[in-house]
Length: 153
View 1: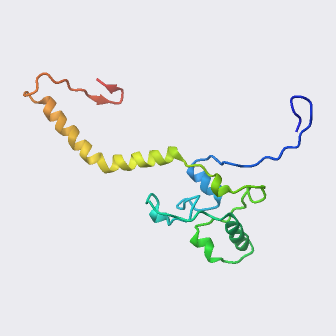
View 2 (view 1 turned 60 degrees about the vertical axis):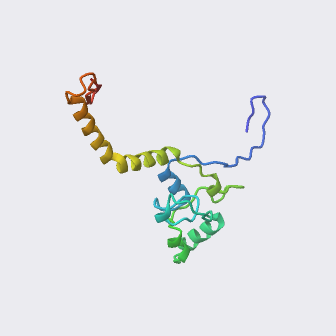
View 3 (view 1 turned 45 degrees about the horizontal axis):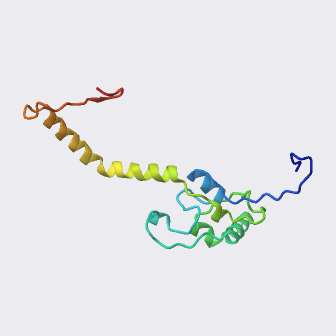
């Protein structure tokens, strides 16, 4: 690699972290989107506080190679793998499973969405009650705010 000072240097790039959203993480890791890209937790137990073993890169590469040769290893289905040729298999000092970063945007979005769905009916009921209280003559000093697509009025 040519350096700014005019010297030529030998460079050894190492992949230390892979930042992507959840679908791309699953694609890179060669697993289905219902599976965890980092560990072997059962897809039905996502979000539970469980201890789970991390994926083993050598095992995944071995299983993918066996599947490519026409075999049907039991681990392929057990670990929810996809038949994809991983770009990281020949990278030196690369453990892709430890380099995957949390997808906080989607985790927060999914978590907030679950909360809204679970609390939604109560919020709607509270909004109806508030409209009744505000519109009643017993509370003449309260201000009603109407929410529309343009915001509050």
